[in-house]
Image 1 (cartoon, one colour):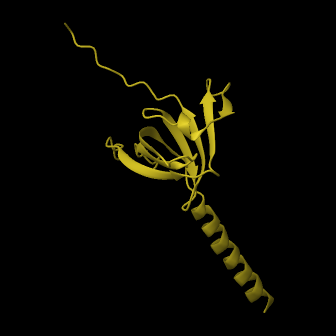
Image 2 (cartoon, helix red, strand yellow):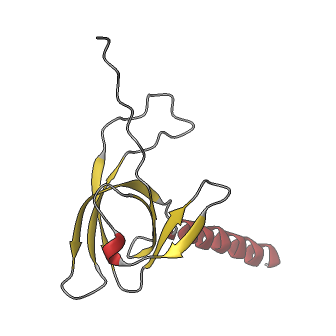
Image 3 (spheres, one colour):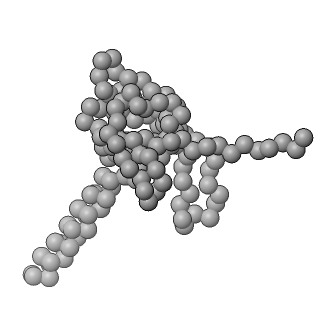
Length: 132
């Protein structure tokens, strides 16, 4: 009888911990391709070009095609500008108007809403030098 109660409690804990982990998603990193601000508000929608990352256990090459994802930014979303290198990075509060096309962003969200957006410098693309 006691064993059954302990077993059911353990199963419930495993199920609940799985749903908590599912609610937390990995941050999306990409480059802003389109910004649509709501009129007169510090909110709107941004479209971000995201390159899917290769999983560590996957042996196939990472896909090179980018996909566009739209995110709804509300007034409760925390916007920050990140400057400096990784170890010396500093964050300062930002406004929706600081979101510009071509800027790099790191978006943290759950399935329903965007929690925070960190604005970074866009990564420089490498250009091939032609032999002339």
